[in-house]
Length: 344
Ligand SMILES: C[S@@+](CC[C@H](N)C(=O)[O-])C[C@H]1O[C@@H](n2cnc3c(N)ncnc32)[C@H](O)[C@@H]1O
Image (cartoon, rainbow, N blue to C red; front, side, top):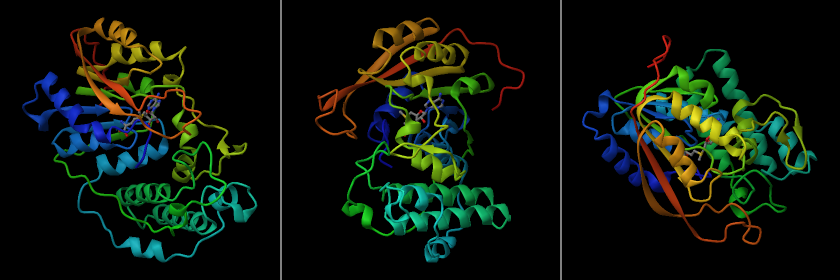
């Protein structure tokens, strides 16, 4: 999935740096926390390597993707895909609000794809409610729907706006394609919470933090994926049909980010903590160092990285093609007391 801040192309850098600092020997006995999990690509890699992974994200579509990648293992039934692909479209919430044929004046999907997406989403929910499919299959197919429809969005890449005319890739007819299954020796655990509400309840060995870097809210940029995922008929507003209840993360607020970040660092019951951040983020490199170094031994790794391009060339604030990715590391010497109810 083409996702802002995805660490897909930084995976080797992350794995090598993390294992060097943590001097990993016996992966299967280690708990790896990926608590701003996004697409789940980082947690998936560590799951494959043998770690027990705990993943979390505040967005529901990310929760669904991670429920599949982190908690599911083979075997999972694949035969339902033909059934879903054979269904006729229906005029549901996505068609009524996000495609032109319904008169919504929004052009996010072709009429055909919006209707087909509605039908698959409704049918999946009803099979699950009638207990004809398991929770594992529900997340497998829902994650697959989110991924398949996202490829057909009539946008430049995020859902902050749509294109006037349907672009070529968006004309392709929706077909559900199943996500890969990530094999691991350990079954993980996935949450859908604000990290600041969750951190006290967890403990583990390696904590990887990859928060938003700037003021762009993921909830606004991916609002359609959130609505397809929750399918909860939300109140929507404005030209883009943004959910009225879209989540405002404090990690996108210059005023709040430092306090919330320090709260996580202070209360994390993980010996090794790693933070991905770039040199253009809301917190400066010095501010991060100052916070992390209070709680133990600090060091940093850097890597030149190609910038994510979602916005139009002219309106872009940062013109440089490359940006520097930082991996801040902390070996914690001050560990908070373990909560009686701490999970894992
Ligand atoms: C930079 S992205 C993570 C990308 C991910 N590492 C990947 O490779 O796909 C940041 C993520 O943090 C999530 N997020 C923002 N605020 C959060 C919060 N307070 N608690 C948990 N997740 C949050 C966003 O929904 C987003 O998916």
